[in-house]
Amino acid sequence: MSAEASVGSHAANTAQSAVSQPVFQSTVEGRHQGLLGSKYVKLNVGGSLYYTTVQTLTKEESLLHSICNGETEVNIDSDGWVILDRSGRHFGLILNFLRDGSVPLPDDHRELDEVLKEAQYYRVQGLIQHCLTAMQQKDIFESVCRIPMITSAKEEQRMIATCRKPVVKLQNNRGNNKYSYTSNSDDNLLKNIELFDKLVLRFNGRVLFVKDVLGDEICCWSFYGEGRKIAEVCCTSIVYATEKKQTKVEFPEARIFEETLNILIYENDRRSGPGGLHLFDSRGPGSSVGAGQSEEEGAVGGDRRVRRIHVRRHIMHDERGHGQQTVYKD
Image (tube, rainbow, N blue to C red; front, side):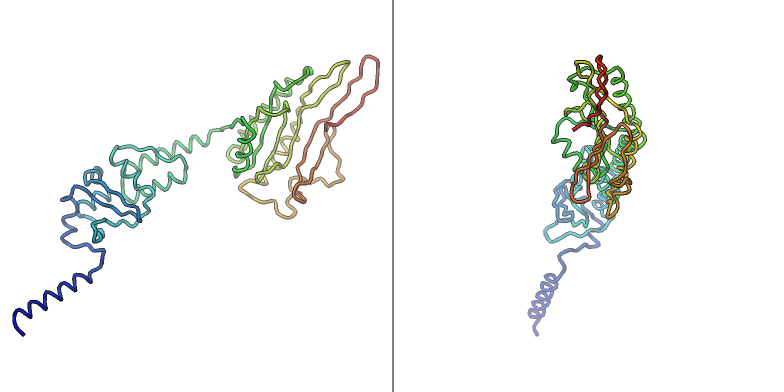
């Protein structure tokens, strides 16, 4: 074989060998040189493409810095993209932090935790500390008792349907009174509000407590589990005195506290299951109701019922000495 043929055969074998090389490769020479000789860097992070500068990636001592100076081996495809086998969802946030030194963090605790994990992987210490500080502030804020105020029926439906905790709602609206109060109604209304505040402090984090200033009732408690109303305690009644009507507010403290404890069965999305109803309503159909109260049960979805507890309405003796009658609220 001639020298020319031998050289040609060797060149062909070399070309075929180069074609058979894998797409992703990193050489010892490239590892020592890194990317410092370049001005711009193309990054493929889990399929998300980012185009930035070496100056940005080297602002902090991090994994990205060590990739640029060649201390960390990376895969670079045939088009020059640096391949990073991580999710690219929060990588743009990491780049913005390197560019500006600060960045707005997500409000959602889960997303914030995801950002923290990415910052820890890339060893961006400034962003790690930023995330930890934000988490600490969120923990402090969430430990504070917050009481949402319902301002529309649509807002109420959305709040109750999406809440994963039991919900206790107090509706109190003094302006709904069409008649005059009895002498102790104001005191009882304040006692209901005070009990609401005490329950908020006692069950904070386990039950969502909300206030409602809408509707027709002056004072009414509602209890929700799994997005549906379980019980209702209405504290407003009407007193018929001589030639006039008066609004009366009751304070059935024991009943309200009992219903609050009952609603805990729905804590952490726990289902009542077959027979679970008796855990919060142990009275049978023939059980008597406490004095001064009436109870109506409307069927909702088979055995699921909403208990509506109302105080009794009284007709007081008038000046002509007519007898007392008892009328239940509709």
